[in-house]
Image 1 (cartoon, one colour):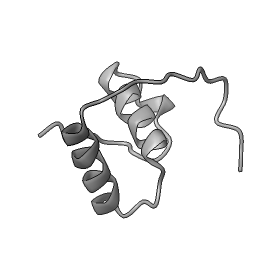
Image 2 (cartoon, one colour; image 1 turned 30 degrees about the horizontal axis):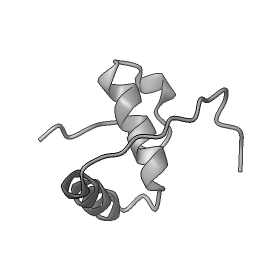
Image 3 (tube, one colour; image 1 turned 120 degrees about the vertical axis):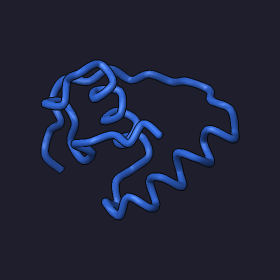
Length: 62
C-alpha cells in the first residue's frame, strides 16, 4: 500500500446508531474502502481540504 503521508491516530467512541449509519454508507459507496479511511476523508472534506481525501472526493451531508 502506498503511503498516505503523515497521519495522527485518533480514537473516538461514537454512538452505535452513528456507527451503523457510517457502515451502511461505506457499503453503499462501492469503493471497498475501510471505515477508518472513509471517516478520514469525510473529516478532510469537512475542513475544506479535499486534497487530503483519498477515496471520497465528495461528501453527501444529508
